[in-house]
Structures are given as structure tokens and as C-alpha cells.
Image 1: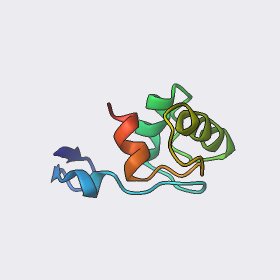
Image 2: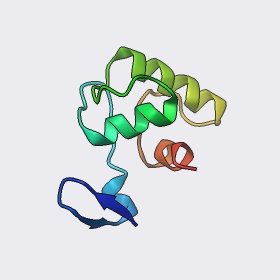
Image 3: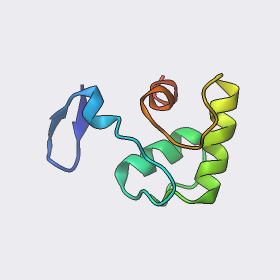
Length: 77
């Protein structure tokens, strides 16, 4: 399980791996941005989407620019 900074409690993987996409903001976006190697401003914008698609292509995932459970799983390896 992971630590949920919002509640201050441990969270199961499915709770932590909430889907994020264009328009999403917050700590999960920052974590994804760090794993993607880009500036972690916590705002899922066009650059984050572009890097997400490139990451998904590299890892043979659906290239939709949305970070769901499958993309999270690869990002967090």
C-alpha cells in the first residue's frame, strides 16, 4: 500500500492509482510528472500529456495520454 497525503493514512493501490488526465491537479500529478522526468508543477497540461503518450508508446501501453492503472503500474516500477 501507499501513503495518502490527503487523508494522512495508508491507502490501497487502487486508491492511490486514481486516473489522471488533462485538467487534473495535485500530488498524484506531481508524482507522475517526476516519474516522467518533467517539471512537477502539479498541473496535468499538454506537456504532461505529450510525455505520457511517449512513455506509453515505450512501454507498449494504449497511447491515450491518460494515466490509469496500467500506466501507473509501469510508472511506479
